[in-house]
Amino acid sequence: MDCSVAKGARLRFLVYLLSGVALAGVAMGCGEDAEGETSADAGETRVLSATETKQLLHQLTYRYKFRQVATPEGAEAAVAGRVFGPHHTVLNFGVALGHGNHAVPVPRAGTAESYGYPRGGFIFTTDTFIKGSDGRLVPNPKLKTAAQWRQASDIEVKMTDKLCLAATGGHCPP
Image 1 (tube, rainbow, N blue to C red):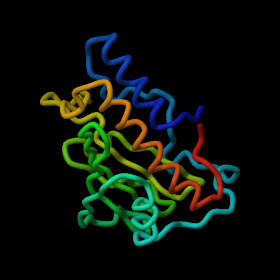
Image 2 (image 1 turned 180 degrees about the vertical axis):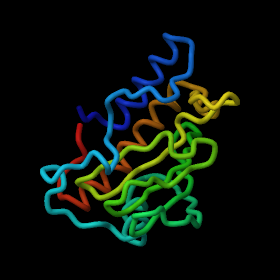
Image 3 (image 1 turned 90 degrees about the vertical axis):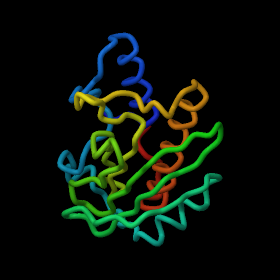
């Protein structure tokens, strides 16, 4: 079952709050990594370049600070950095471009918060959840308010949807 980045992050956060424990390793049924791709999922798509990806992201209303990052094994290119949105919302992100199955790690989260979009030819990583001192996933403490959590989800959805539209001509899975 596919679901959006925002729904997945909100669902994990809600379960986290209700359970009182971190959700390390718990699959919530959202996103698929490139390993789960089938020929029906692949369709006719093109892989975006790093330059094109940055240009597309700049079309959104956010500010970015990009950083150099190694291209993950199997990927054709990679983009990483920090996005600045409303309500002082700041997220680290990475985008592995291509049909490989390795994500770009982001600070304090690694690749734990990765979502594969096989038809779009990319894997998107963020740090809405980070690794706690015990290694389990915990909500990122820099997202302190409900407004910041909503913005973080909106930012992720708008970024990934912009890339899906450019690569496939269609929106990311709802």
